[in-house]
Amino acid sequence: MVMNVILSRKSVRKYTSQRIEDTKLEKILEAGRLAPSWVNVQPWKFIVVKNQETKNVLCEAAGGQPQVRNADTVICCIADLDSWNKTNFGKVLAQKGLDEATCESIVTSNLLNPSTLGEYETLLRSVEQLTYAVSYMTLAAEEQGIGCCIVGAMANELTKTSDETAQNVKSLLGLNNRQVLVELLTLGYEEDPKPAKKYRKDTNEVIFYEKIN
Image (cartoon, rainbow, N blue to C red; front, side, top):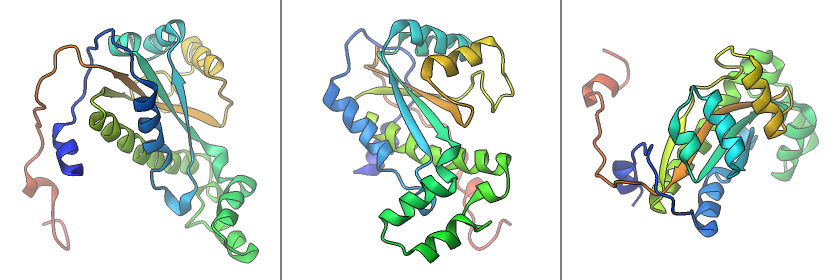
């Protein structure tokens, strides 16, 4: 059951040297590909990194977090801002069987297409959508018995860090200026498996009915 996976999932930062089977990695990636998105725009790309030199650079960009360097596999989760332009967004909408007039009304709508509002709004909405895919992949990893950690603290456009390391990462990953590395998923078999401990706010602090009291 999905709830069992949610309850057992935790951030895993120490891994064994065991390699992740291709079939398991494919299922994790497929979970991300199948995640929901607003009007099905799917503003994401996933880059699978196994090369140690690239992982070392990603580790440096992430402030030296060792799980990035030591993971068997790192999935780079990219927000693709060009997914919202008229050509790309229109293509996705057309695949759904929508007529030309409906497609036009959607891609030109301030409500449905953030690119009509500006760069900040496009980035904000793309990051929001990408989190759905990331969540799906973390749960798929847990289901496959693979340890996973989400790394969001790194040199990139979101942290306003455009130093040499950030630019080196974009170059290594083949990213253009419309593609933003938002998160890394570090994957590997857990070195010392332990049950998850969930430290969360109480229900009455986060769940309300009708309005916040």
